Length: 222
Image (cartoon, rainbow, N blue to C red):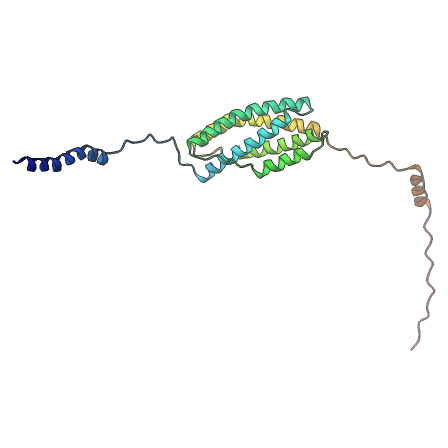
């Protein structure tokens, strides 16, 4: 083979050999990625997770306000709720992340309303307002947990069974503090005066006047 012909042959063959490894690499089976731990989150479970995360955020906001309240009992209650909510929020956020449920970063309309209400409230009445909002939020959260007890997701059922007894005790404590700050109003009927009593007796004692008989009318004869 002439040198020129040999050089041309090598020029044609060598690129094909150089491309063979890359072609095999391109046509090879790609490495399988480790899938994220996920479950088939139904609409009901998805609503429970997102709603409960939002309710826990609202409860945490109120507990932080309560921890600096004027009432010693309310301050202690606020610290207890803050500690409990922080732990449960961490568990629920992890559960949502494992199921690829994005966290809503926007402030809810309920929290905006509560923030405005607490900001506009006067100092003497802020403790009473806090107990009202704490009681309402705890009741809503407790109802959400009870409604999801029969979830098909075992992680959600475990979360509820672990947190529900603690939440029930917390709800009873909040209700007790609320009742202490909102005693029932007793309405005392007014005592009748002596003059009105005597006048009523006089009216009862006076005999009724006899009725004046009507004059007899003669029947007209036809």
